[in-house]
Image (cartoon, rainbow, N blue to C red):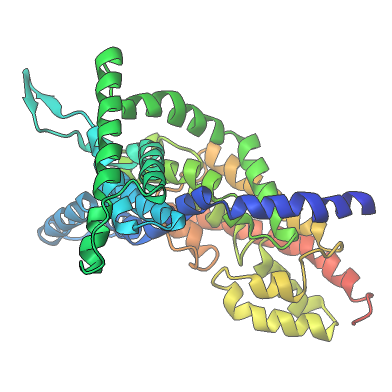
Length: 423
């Protein structure tokens, strides 16, 4: 066992840390984070339209519903556009080239793959764009196209395939001219590929990516086994001092965030909760297994304050309680510490796995609706599940049950720790 732990610490963990800092993966993670203001405002609009607005008098409800519809149009309806711009910016910045130019070229490259005509009735018109290409369904194509186009642009910039102006030229002008050739080459490559794909397949590349990459991956992500594996590895990385969510962000956000956004879009377009397209989304993890932070450590804090006789543990718990209420648990992770603590590895890994099974089965059985509202991750436990499911009392109850189970499992280990001498 000691040999295995040593191998993990010396071989596996450093490689995992290196992967978590890989610039392409970091750019994807940061781009999803950058979208938060847009996704939040859109989610709030959808939440209001399906909770509070229906209870208002028609004279008041109608204009509010219309305003919320406009908010949706300017937020969730254009999410793939927001994402591809953010991705171009973050990836170009990671390569050390002009990030604003990277964002614009990424956006332009994304646009050239979108069909330039649409059929209205029996008439085909040029210059019409199907909004579905801009919404949540376009996130994955935006990721692929934005990534490749920004890499091409950045490589050309780094290899000095640029226009060099005299030093007397203002820096802003020099920077803009330096991006001209890389930008032209990148957009022409994207346009040529778009033409070839649409000509020889009869479909846009975006549609092919959704059909053959996005949908199969999202389908795999919806199984209970996949959800358990993701949950296990989040806890596993945290135990070794690595931010589990950051390490797995490209997987979690790349698969489960589009599922959440698709659910939000479904509701925004007047769909029914019973027909939500995805069972498990990014917010489902937060609603059912991130109470107080990874490991449902708010339950650990409560158990320590009730049963612990160790002064050091009680001090850390008291300091960690205010932050734990808002799902920030670094004081507990590194203050107890839970990191590399053999006493706590079993409950720390086991509790979220049990919690995710309960949350998943409750959702699959229709006891609680799937999560379809993006709620800030700092929302206190139980309230998070209530809001994320559009006001489901049963979802709040399932979250509370997970919290109680976590408390029951943490408590024996807290009592055992009483017999371990303080350092």
